[in-house]
Image 1 (cartoon, helix red, strand yellow):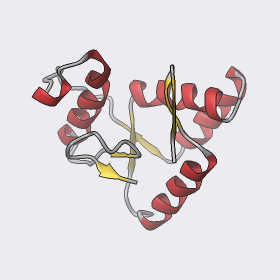
Image 2: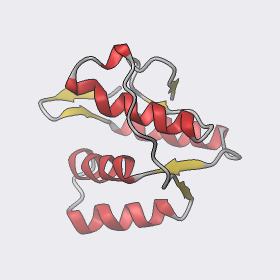
Image 3: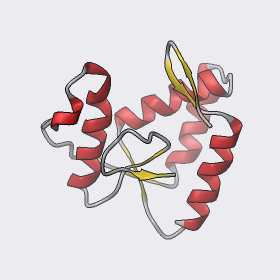
Image 4: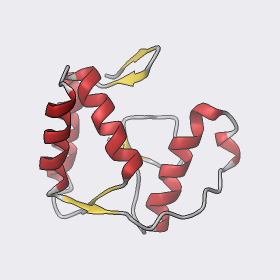
Length: 117
């Protein structure tokens, strides 16, 4: 589904559809957000959907009406699988979701303990 570029994984329209199908099947679950995921949303919106900054911010504002914000962020404790710099954000997001009693849902198959969309 996703494609790789020098800037990381870029979701495709298929991923977009898969997310919405996953979201419908988990309609009762709260979506959590934090600054890291919001910056990621802006980056992906501008890369994959070619939004300009204003469009990406507007799309995020619309999405945030459905989110619970995870303001309490624990001090990072990186697991052994996050030994490279490229894995630190994934590991920390997994830690944040666990800290809040939630699960990290992602398209990334390389994050141990995450729920695959």
